[in-house]
Structure formats: structure tokens, C-alpha cells
Image (cartoon, rainbow, N blue to C red; front, side, top):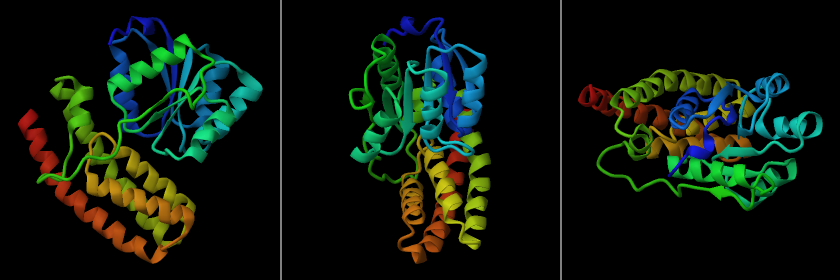
Length: 261
């Protein structure tokens, strides 16, 4: 897709996941767009106060301040018209209505590829009054399991043949996931369900590009159970299985890195 429309555009990216930050900036690096990164809603607001932007890519589930609250403040106090695109793994009608209610202009459903990103940016920048219901992109459901635990199709698409980039993303995944699992263990131990479901959501987001479908399903289930506080007795077993899948995925990913090197 021709991305000339992005040349010189200033984009604010509000995203707490390091892997997703890297993926989005890699996708924009070749377009001529200029961008800044905020790790949460509070940082996004501070950057918006001190700079001018043409568009905001706003993750929904972030620490300190989520995307919904940040958007409410932006609309009420800072900028009522700047286009804001939600980035989220949520997809229900109720949540879609909430995007519109807080003043978002569109939604990118994670995980999204280059084509979905560019088309959404093109549509929003040309029609900034579009609603979230009018501009929603999705890559569909997770692929069926194959003999390998891994599904690297999205990573391969985003990397566009750049093996060094693929190695960087895989290494980031391997470095950050153990810390995420440790946090889930800690929150489980003290029954801190709010932070547990937020951390499970973070894990699910990290699995959107370096895909391990079985881990993604477990993260999604743990997030749902902890958030709704239902079937809590199943969470320890799911977390244990999640860790076992990560051990197996680590072996395959290290083989992938060796093949790419």
C-alpha cells in the first residue's frame, strides 16, 4: 500500500508493551511519519500537552492510566478533535460502543498486520470524524495448531525479510515473558485479581506477534477468570501449563534464532 500520506505526520503511540512498541515503530519507520512513545495514558497526556500530533494510537489496557481514561481527559481538557485509534484485543459490541462513547475515532484489533494498520491510518487521517464503529480492523481468530507450538506468520509479515529485526523481537519476547509470569505468580499468591488480570492481558498482548497459540488461549482464559472472578480454582493449573508451554516454545524460538543468524 502507498504510504505517502504518512510523510511528515506526527503520531503519538500510547502502548506499554515493549514488543508492540517495537512492532509499531518498525512499521512506521519507512513511512516518513514522526512518532513519540508513551508507556501509559498519563505519559500520553503529558506528551500531548507539550507537542502537536496529527493522530494518537491508544492502547486500551495500560498501567497508571488506561486508554479509556486518557481519551476522556484528552477530549475534555486538551483536544476535542485529534483522531484517536484504539488498539485492543477486545471485540465485543459493548466494548465497541465504549470506544465511541469516550470519543475514539477507530479501532485496530490486535494482532494487526501492516495492511490493517496502514488502511486504518489512511481512512482516519482522511476522514477524522469517522466513528469507532465505522473503522474497525481485525486479523481474525488465532490459527489452528500445527506440529510446532509457534505461529510466526505475523512476525514474518511485519519483518518484511529483516532477519535481524525478527531476532530482536524474539529475544525481547524471551526476555520479558519470564518477568510477566513471575508477576502473575506473585499476584496469584496474594489473590490480587485486579493486577493478575492486567498482567495476564499484558502476556496475551505479548503473544500477539510471537504467537504461541496455546499460551495465548491460556492467557485469555486467565485474564477472563481473574477479571470476572469466576472459576478461580482453575487459574493455578492454567498458569502452570502456561509456564510449561513457554519452556517448550523457548526451545523452538532459540532454534529459530539460530536459523536466522
